[in-house]
Amino acid sequence: MNIFLFEYALGSNEDVDPHILLEGKLMFNRLLKDFLDNNFNVITLIGENHIKYYKPRDNLKIYSHRGSEVTETFEEVLDREEIDGALVIAPESDGILYTLTRSIEKRNILNLGSSSDGVKIGGNKYLTYKRIKDVVKTPKTLPPRRYIVKEIEGCGGSNQFIIQEDHIIQEYIEGEPYSTSFIVGKKLYPLSLNRQYYRERRYIGGEINVDHPLKEKMIEESMKALKEIEGLNGYVGVDILLEGESIYILEVNPRITTSIVGIYTTPPISQLLVDNARGKDLSYKVEKKDISIRLQ
Image (tube, rainbow, N blue to C red; front, side, top):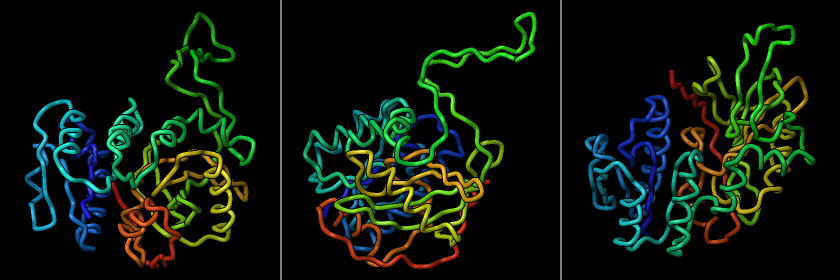
């Protein structure tokens, strides 16, 4: 089976934040090895700035991207090769994941990830909030429009700033950050609970497949949220904030997340993603490994 595997930070020649690039490499390398080791033929597209780190092999064909706009090259590869299934790792920002997903759907290629409809909702924090706010705890969220933030007792117009329409304002909750990982298909298949670490409001890694007294409850609350968003498929992550015993669902990520690096299953994750996309029921075991991710 021919699989097209694409990771945006590696595949484009954009000047990507080194932190984001590292996450992209980790996710791509993990999945690339999994697909190749399990006898899938992989076709991929790598930006010329990064292609030196990857060598073709019998079941790996690599295209190089040399321009500035990767979407056109992405579509050329889809049209040139006989591709049975595709998996895209890309950000939701600027409609990137949505656009690439639509390119796959228009060619009737088996999509191993979420549909464009799932990306449209799951990739938009406010639309996600509207879908899940009545079924799970989630921070109160104001609709995206222009806001002005002022000091309560400020004078002379000092210390004011404008929030633009492409942002939302959300209630701040002090708590411990976690995430859950699932394969979403005919059913919801839990993979792991993950502890997240942040420094200066930035994700810097975490521990994968951890135990916690509230693990089953966090999985249950995540599933309630996932059921409210149509079009989710394949690997999906849910971001959680734990305040005491209160579980807040923050976001739904309709795509591969960095936690995939530490998730190992029997059968392998590559086979599960293909079987799930084909509409099969999954039977699997998640291996218990002590794996931590450190980005700083």
